[in-house]
Length: 501
Image 1 (cartoon, rainbow, N blue to C red):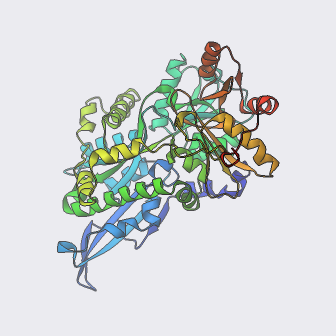
Image 2: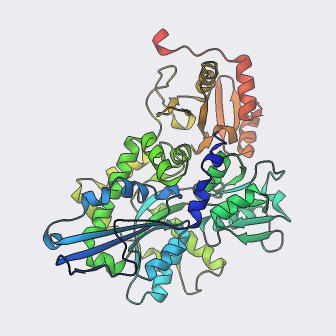
Image 3: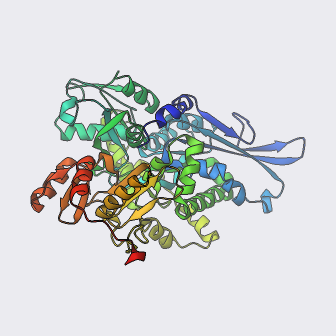
């Protein structure tokens, strides 16, 4: 892991404190469209609120913005023949500021997670007058909640949720991570009001306080659980995947903007479809670009939305996404963040795929093909060392070397262990090693995983508990990555390259 990155890229926390604003032109508080008296052209403002550091939003935010994909698809004929587009981009560290600006008609399209989206849609129902917000597309999502996490300082003695009793824990209140934390504590029979001190902190504050040990633990959403661990100052003690509750980030649009400019909404969704395609075609290259645009390391970007990543890039609105919203309604009501009259159906009725389906039709895409493409974005091809076909993505492993532009894929963990010895002998340095949970396929950093070696086969697991259960069945022992390396160095036979066979 590149622990020096936090020092080298510590500026990210400074950037996170103040909303980032990117605009072709600024017109705060202007209406969605108005005439430009100097040119007699109609001006259409398109204001988009993103969360750049939240990697789930990359294909709907930074990639569209920096690659000028929206400009590529904006309509220029018919009623848009004599139009000047004023595109405004602004980035925030969480969803609530986006909701506030959407309510003030300063943002037309907003990108946010399921909990903030639920608050957004219900807030408009209560305060938006005739205007509502619609959930029109999904960005990244996890069917199990992978991506949310609870972390503690790197040298903390806290290893389990039970160890948090009497401690101070922070989390962004009202976020998906908040819901995950409450469910996790309930499962561990910990009362958040009596057994620990729970405080609200944003990602940048929580990360800073972890480093200075002003808090004992921090719960957060994508990508901070993995990002803080990757930067070397935190370790994960609980993963959102353990709750088995879906989570997502999606696209919301003001209903008045969508009604007035449906063609522009369709153009944005075309850009989203294009960005998804672009990332799938060049995951390493685009991840490196996203690092430059957002300050989030390419390895972490790749971990979340790369092949076999923690989050799937699927723009459709499927049942799993509706379940994520349904859960957010239930949890937010328990927290007292929603009025008692709000029901899950109140939120679910705001889901609308009309614009997305129109975008697909105009691009010659079939709905089922888009879904299948998202589901099939897994590690494939041949083993970098042996040339054998990678048959099972769950058992595959990857390494990203410092200074290299491509990730090396391996069919198995045992193959990568042999390759690592050779790479080390050649003076190569690894920036990240990825493995996958044997049962669920979750992408994991090898250094933070648990392993079971059974003969020539090595399996990785997210949790020590799962590894221990598997090891008991296999009559084997659980090992850390360091222990696995030592064991393999003593017993493994060299892997023979395919060209030498």
